[in-house]
Image (cartoon, rainbow, N blue to C red; front, side, top):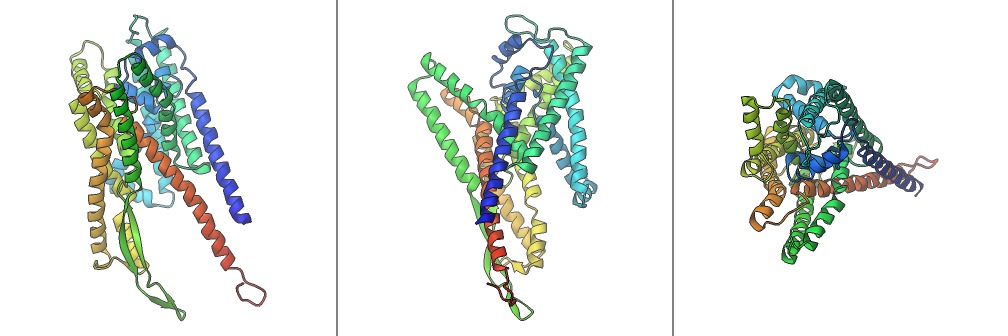
Length: 440
């Protein structure tokens, strides 16, 4: 009991630490970057709801709207992770480095360096872009544009992103759950009260009828149910272990199963897709006004405006791609096949080794197809709802997916934390011996 009680106290400390770090993150989102007219910037963002700026603003918990020191959020780090994940698949040398004893640390360090570079590029692009933007009332957003403002913005935003990345790593190591996912979760959750308020205001002003308000509620409940059901769904692959005799004792021979989730990739594909779709916005900030290239880039950016047909098609394409890509990273069938073979396990009717890996590949491919279709429908649901019924949906499908997915993963980790302690306690109690050398 003392061991279980100690583990419970440790879990409580981890949860408290996680909440404390998330509180620090929320406080930091309120710290503004110097040189910005907050009122003019807020007026500008009031007209940007539903755009790519609005999506990134949701991910940062409103930090981009206030242009706080955390305006870039965690997105540069996610983009760097995408780059190195793709490079690891394209270049076997990086994959070999990853498998080394300290290989993962090396890749992580390189990812941080790439994050700094991306922060500098995006920070400079935002500074240049804000200098040329005015609020709807005609007021300039940047009080004193120039080189000093751009340099200060780059340094401030880069430091802010690295601070957020450090907070996420602290949660992963000392808290409960995945730190990066929880940072994004906290940013999205912070916008829920505002979304509810805007929906109620539309209803009170007569812009949203009672029937449409009911439709919004039904869609949200249905979306939550579908997400929870799918995120917890998995297929059981039967596994049989051969009997082995070691020191006159028989081991194995029992039947078990290998659980494979329907959505192996989790919430990362829509996050990755959103990060990549933000590149045209970043590039547009660097192109001078009036140049032919500016017109071309702006055309691409306008075509990829959230809610438009091309945006939905590209978004779905990225989601499907990253679902399959991330599934291969998360569930390595070759390694699992070898592990089963070494431990005397096999799938009934399937030869151990290469055939087992091929069989698992087929199952993962089919499950990933189902998961990618489900994820695509959830993510573009607000756009479809608005186009068909003209119902504004302030809670994006990607946001709902992240909120529910991260909550389920965090709860699962907390349960695993307690279950592991239960097994450890039972194992230790069974392993105790009395003075005669017999267990008691």
